[in-house]
Image 1 (tube, helix red, strand yellow):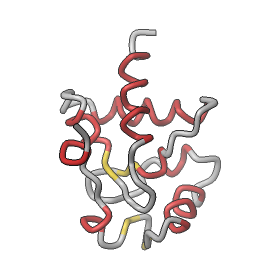
Image 2 (cartoon, helix red, strand yellow):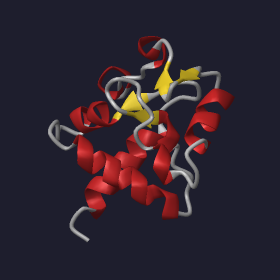
Image 3 (cartoon, helix red, strand yellow):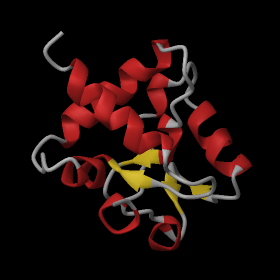
Image 4 (cartoon, one colour):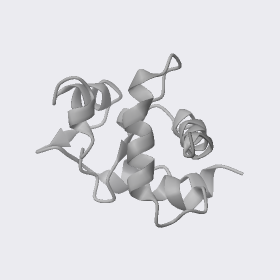
Length: 110
């Protein structure tokens, strides 16, 4: 599969998002030096639900803190519940105080 290497790189970054923090599709794309590929990051994370290893895809949201990937978690409340279990408050499918919870892999990873 052509995207397999890219998908694996997305999974490795996503696994490093700390508990109680979130990042965006675009932030992962920027870290991987593929700034225009935020949508591909989303495709990779949608595919991650079929993997044996746990990928915390629920911690990746759009650039405005909206839970745009919620439909890929079995039901539309799972993503919200997972984030709330980590202490993140969600109102109308948007993370409250998004900037306070935002984790930027460009700054946090080598």
